[in-house]
Length: 377
Image (cartoon, rainbow, N blue to C red; front, top):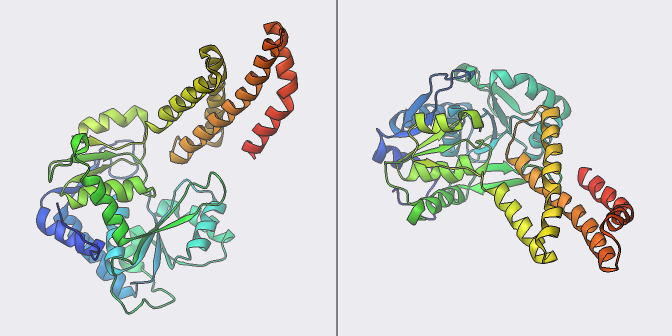
C-alpha cells in the first residue's frame, strides 16, 4: 500500500502508485453491447492512466488552469471522468462532478452555486447543458470532451501562483437535494486520500490485498462512494475499480462474473436494513406483533406508489431514489401509527373491532392527509 501522510496530495499519491503498480489495472469498464460507449469494455493500467493524466494535466496548464479553478465534469460514469479528475487535482484545480439526471433548473443551480470556471461535457449532453445555462446566471467556459485536444478555452481568471497542498479542495460533491436545495460538500486532497486509506485498512472480512483485488462498483461517479471511498482505496493498494455505467439488476451478476470482481461495493443493504429497524421500533412501541404487522403493511402500498412515480417520471432507481423510498416508508408508518393508536384506544374502551377501525379512520383522516401532503410537497 502507498503510504500517505497529512501533506500528501492526490497527484503525488497517484505518481507513486503508478511507479509501484504500473502494470496492474487501475480502472476497468465491463463489456456491454447495448452501451453507447466502449461496448467491448476497457482495462486501463496504472502506466496508461499515468500517461493519459500527464497529457491532460499539461493541456490544462497550457490553457491556464491551476490552483483555485473549479471544473465541472459532465462525463457520466465514463473513464474520462476518472482521468480528468486526476489531471485536475494534479494541477491544483477542483473537480465538480455533475449528476446526469439533473433537470435544467437543478443543473443551473449547481453551476451558479459552485461558480465553476469550465464545464467538460460529453457531446451527447451538450443540449442538456445549454438548457441549464439558459436558466443560470453564470457563464462558465465549455469544452466538449470529444474535442478537448484542440478546443480547450482559457479561463477568465488566472490560476493562483501556488502549488496544490493537502488542504487544497479536490472536489465539491453535491447532496441529492431530497430535503431542499443540494448542498455542496468541499473535500480536500487530504480528506479524499484519508477516506481511501481508511477503507483499505479495515481488515478482517473487509481486508484488501495489495495488487490482487478487483472492486465492482455500480454507483455513480458523482457520488462519494465510487469516486472517492472505493476508488482511492483501490489506487493506494494497487488494485482495480470496475466501474459500470449504472446499476441494473438484469446485468449485475453477469458483470460481476465477467469482470472477475473479488469485491462488490454497493448500498443495497440500506433500504432493507432501514425497514427492519422500522419494524423493530413498531414492535417495541406496541408490544404486539399483530399491531406492528398491521402498521408495517402500509409500507408495501407506499412503495408501489413510489415505483409508479419513478416510472411516470422516466427515472431509474438511484441513491436519491433510495433515500426517497426510506422517507416514504417513514411517512407511511407514521400515518399507520396514528390510526393504529386510535383503533387500539377504541378497542380498549370496549368497541368492536369493526367499529373501532371505522371510528379510527374517520378521526385520523385529516391528520393522515395533512402528514402525507406535507411530505409530498
